[in-house]
Image (cartoon, rainbow, N blue to C red):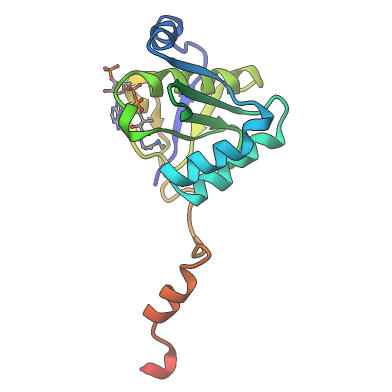
Length: 176
Ligand SMILES: CC(C)(COP(=O)(O)OP(=O)(O)OC[C@H]1O[C@@H](n2cnc3c(N)ncnc32)[C@H](O)[C@@H]1OP(=O)(O)O)[C@@H](O)C(=O)NCCC(=O)NCCS
């Protein structure tokens, strides 16, 4: 997976979009320290334990370097955009719950997260190990960094519970 570079100078305003979402019951705001466990659970349930681990790094900064989207009824986290987690000046992980995608939540979260990086003094930001390239190209003019693939997500260890399965599938030198 490649990384993308974003110039933070002229980020579009998403104030209108944020207001419209609020009218529909979605609030975009910074996560609070007492919501740490809820965020971890959200990330693990809707994305992966790796993302849950990464996003927890946001709580090592003050203010916490993560924005969330909440839904009014039932009250819950439905999106997240973290930064300064996996590496310095990295944006992500970010994700929106599947059933509320396509409503503009991802766009607002993206801009708020990038504004957060800009407020730390960065002129450019890196979107690490990018998935939806055209989403970032379209919304913030991000471009793929030449030579950045495979990036930092290499030599991944199996998660707890996956080791046995992996070991069973592996052939040992004695099998040959
Ligand atoms: C990518 C993601 C965060 C987008 O969230 P979202 O709330 O659905 O996005 P929005 O509704 O704000 O979309 C904003 C714009 O981006 C476009 N867009 C949304 N997802 C896109 C995608 N995967 N690829 C390309 N464009 C996309 C929308 O069409 C919309 O365009 P418009 O403004 O012209 O209508 C969401 O699909 C997601 O969580 N995906 C899984 C996790 C993921 O891939 N995260 C990124 C890791 S690098």
